[in-house]
Amino acid sequence: MILASQRAAPLPPDERRAALIESTLSLVLAHGPDVSTRQIAQAAGVAEGTIFRVFSTKDELVNAAVASAFDLSPLLRDLAAIDRAAPLPVRLVAAVERLQQRTVRIFRLMDTLGCLRVTETDRDRRDRSDQGVLIGQALVDLIGPGSGQLRCEPHEAARRLQLLTVAFSHPRFVEDDPLPPVEIVATLLDGIRLRAGHDAPHPDSTNGEHPC
Image 1 (tube, rainbow, N blue to C red):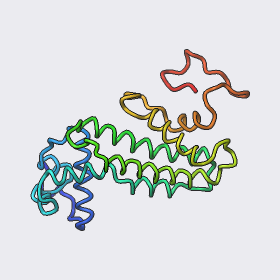
Image 2 (cartoon, one colour):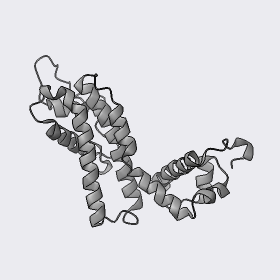
Image 3 (cartoon, rainbow, N blue to C red):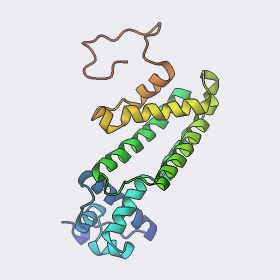
Image 4 (spheres, rainbow, N blue to C red):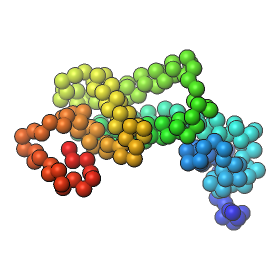
């Protein structure tokens, strides 16, 4: 139990709302939607009554938390902040790190909630398509300065990068062993065929790590 002396200092309304949403999302990912307001308050370090000064009901808070997982704004900000002066592989690894985090979080959330809150409507499909376009454009902008190194157009490179990231990160496909971002980028840029100047990995020396 969190004592009053242990609670964080009062936050401005927007920050308090964001903190409640983030704490709730973490709990939903771990335990499903049937978390209690007491659990949420403890995780956020606030009094339970604070929740109902921000949200009318627990369901409203849980819905807001689920919606936040699909919010593209943080991802687009992160992609825009990647240093365009860095080498292309470095830029792509940074992008995949962020894409992978989002992929894992969303699919774990969908598995946790099942069909309860994620039944897809026509509008949802349109929204998902629109999100894919926005992410793709952000990746095209990121790839653009190095496009002369590629044998396909930036939009096709962006599409393949998204597909590889999902395929190598989706919890149902990879369980607890997603491909590291650096290997996803290496697969995109170089494939897995051994090239001159690269030593072949010994089958007994990988220690469970991805050898390529």
